[in-house]
Amino acid sequence: MLFIESVLELETINIFYLNFVADALIYVRNFILYIGFWLFGYIVVCCFVYRRYARKLPTRTRGSLGAKRVLLIVAHPDDECMFFGPTIFRLCEQGAEVYILCLSNGNFEGKGNIRATELWKACTELGVPESNIILINDTRLPDSPKTHWPVPVVAKLIQHHLEAYDIDTLVTFDRGGISGHPNHSAAFYAVAYIFVEKNMPQKCTVYTLDSVNIIRKYLGVFDLPLSFILSSKRYFLRWTESRRVVRAMKHHKSQMVWFRYLYVMFSRYMVINTLRRISLADIELELEVDD
Image (cartoon, rainbow, N blue to C red; front, top):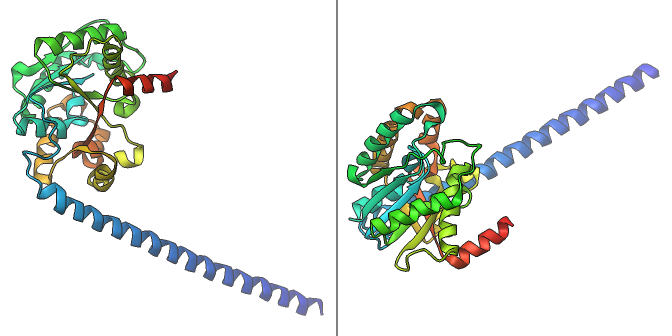
């Protein structure tokens, strides 16, 4: 009897196990189909947005800021390609006079001279004249993720170049600095300082580049629908156009380690830039959030 009961118990356990495995497989299959359905639908939406808006909209008006003289502020050589490539490319194409103000020579690894040369090559590849590239070499502004640059110093540099070049549009990082690098964020806080001190020229319109979460950051071109929904100012490059930004980035040979190649392949910032216009009220609100 004990033997028979043991056999029956084993059979019951075996049936339960088989049923559990069968149910689990059905659940996994349905889950995969469900996810696959939504992924397919999202890809279809991406293709529609690309064809309907990105390809057919004339490049002369696409995302136009109405800018004539633009000062684009970055922290290190290669920021202009890694983050602002689509903006620089399109502004140059639309006939704006673009100036690049780089606040340091990127000497974190002792390659400042090399990176300075690479900056010139990359910017000219994007369409910025050599005479419009300004590189700051100030010991108070070292390239370091552990150093917080003095905001008044950066603000004074920016204000000087706004006035010297008669700038009507300023573009820089937002508070998050895309990657969270404090040198990137310093550019935003310097602009905020200029606003708060009421030294921003009245005719100058200020835009910041949107920081996005890490998932969107590496969606590449598939972030296009979200970018159209969440931002009214956006620059998007077609495949052939984005190759030029990639070529410009490859001029930064000293920085092209293995993970940068992955960045170039997958980052949305190589093909999409979304910009937000900011004012004194926006600055005050962001500074309150910091506090």
